[in-house]
Amino acid sequence: MNPLELPFDTDEMLTGLKPWIECESPTFDAAAVNRMMDIAAYEMAALGATVERIPGRMGFGGSVRARFPHPDMGKPGILISGHMDTVHPIGTLDVLPFKRDGDICYGPGLMDMKGGNYIALDAIRKLIAAGLQTPLPVTVLFTPDEEVGTPSTRDLIEAEAARNAYVLVPEPGHDDGGVTIGRYAIARFNLMTKGQPSHAGARLSDGKSAIAAMARKIGEIEDMTGPDCTFSVGVIHAGQWVNCVSSSCAAEALSMAKKQEDLDAGVERMLALQGDMNGVEFIVERGVTRPVWRPDTPGTAKIFDIAKDIAKELGFEMQGRSQGGGSDGNFTGAMGIPTLDSLGVLGAGLHTLKEHIQVDSLTTRAKLMAGLLMRLA
Image 1 (cartoon, helix red, strand yellow):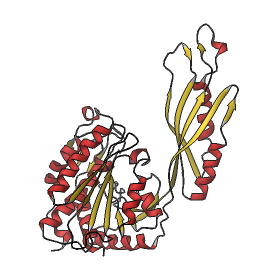
Image 2 (cartoon, rainbow, N blue to C red):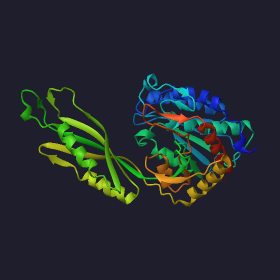
Image 3 (spheres, rainbow, N blue to C red):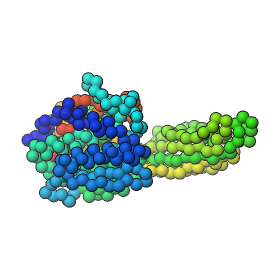
Image 4 (cartoon, helix red, strand yellow):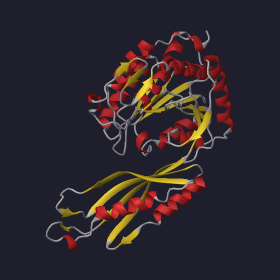
């Protein structure tokens, strides 16, 4: 049977996705992420996989690894790598419920990336039901911390990828149905200003505001953005009482570049900003980093050619591109392991309260995944 003719059913897929989306799993809530991993582990066990629960660390939830039955189990095969954490806090369902509205369906984490993870499992489910054996053994690894740069599971992902011949990443697909064949380098930074507290009403001049100093530094940091390297500050925490001059302020910054050498130069520029500013200390600590995944890896080109052929059979021309917005594909691609990313569902509004998918992309992308699983050898 042609895997592109497998009987994927949109309504059935949405029914299966509903409990995934209604199990909210923000990165920093380890218990919530583990509840989502329970659901995925159960479904993969029901498909006959050998399932392992890997404990979390650094305060994050755990991971789930499933190896599906195959005559060559244990030999290099295909790794499907996805994350189950989302940026949406518990309670987002109150304002962004799982709901279909004609050709689109809403829900927190539906596009990034539970929808893609689900269609990967549904592709495996349909292949098993049809009695089709993939040429290579298939392993699925779901991890809990991608949205914060994968600090606790990068080595786990890299170790699993090293045991396999190919890596497929069902992150959200591009608007035109294209996929990602390379990603830019990304560095995160933890920032801190330390000032001098005082009473903001009675003794204002005695204080040195950490908030004011951080505000000035944010402008300086973002003004460093140029064509080769970007800088942005996306998180800031400070203050408790409005009548107190703040003594500390914490923030997080992100830098991105197309070339590793440009990111390395950007890191040096960030670290050089440290020092004393009129009695306020500014501290920069380098956080997690995603390496450049170059789009010219020969093995990735091979997978992409196969994907393009499958796309033609499905009725569209597939484009491949290198892009920003890191994923765990950065790690596997940088290792030189043939990797194809953005194989997940299509939609818009990811990381917002309008996150949604195009319903008709569920079956198309599931067929694409099934085709890849059957043609990679």
